[in-house]
Length: 124
Image (cartoon, rainbow, N blue to C red):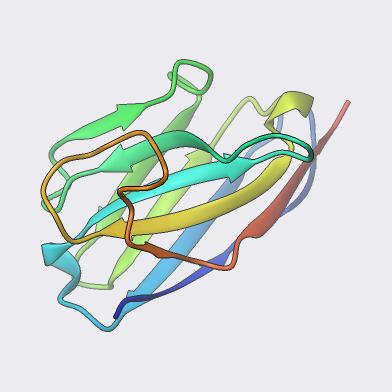
């Protein structure tokens, strides 16, 4: 079992920045791939960014490419999502996810573990 706890959400004005963090426990952190998803009201949960076990490979949704950066610290068991140039449409609950198998899928079902989510609200 992997436990994930997100933090760092909040209210920010459009154009501002936020940094989300996720702390993992229960497994050797360097053995699991990590991802951030988000879910806006009335919408399905969608992929935002993934990062490989070593941190050398990252992928981003087109909607956040160039604005968001995913990173991990395997010594601290953390994965972060730096979000810049935020837009009102970025408003959502953001979830950290972990996966034990190889690959960095962009759909939700292959991800094994999920955090409880953290709310991000961007005002116009």
